[in-house]
Length: 275
Image 1 (cartoon, rainbow, N blue to C red):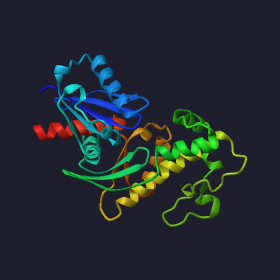
Image 2 (tube, rainbow, N blue to C red; image 1 turned 180 degrees about the horizontal axis):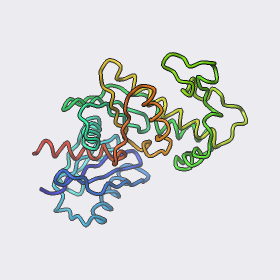
Image 3 (spheres, rainbow, N blue to C red; image 1 turned 90 degrees about the horizontal axis):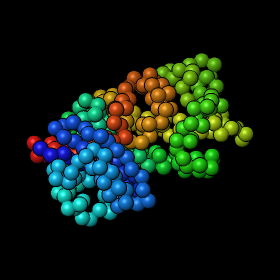
Image 4 (cartoon, helix red, strand yellow; image 1 turned 30 degrees about the vertical axis):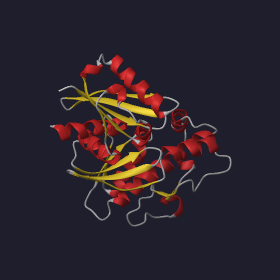
């Protein structure tokens, strides 16, 4: 069997992986001005750096919003498409090793995908994600460089921004410890420094996504959530999600290749159908 190339095409960022013998090979991410340039740049670089010949490629599988701009087979190779939500589920299931989960895909916005064995379906989403983080940062910090915002946030103090139960109550409330957030940005002052604003923005985005994920599972017994997408790379995930695990008695998993799960799932979609 040749290598199957899964490509998650965004508007400006493309993620590409190979799957051979059900093993993930060299995930890679490329950014360019438009989806076509991004895809072909990623594909060429992937082949070159991994010493893969065109004749070694069994199938190219596209997914993601940017794939709509790709109308021809990639370099004349057999090219197919995978439903993005199915790819999310397959990739998250493969990377986490869990069969019964809700996949939380943190992209520009956030989509929620139920994965119960082979039953994989989109169950909703919220318009909160990387786009929100970038937009608020442009307005409040004069930058949309997420890496710069994350670095600023590591020097910030969230207690200067968010209001906790302890700030408004002398005693814990039922099910709500004193350190739980009562109001995002509820304590922010007009002279807040950039570091505190940065950590406040990131906590706002991550806590809102985490809460939406938990709420999406209320009518089920699912307590495992697999987080995928670029926002999983934020260092602040290590602070926010463990706190929410303790509060809600759930588990948030960030797999090794979390940002590449959709591309991995696209390749697996073909591999499962042909094996």
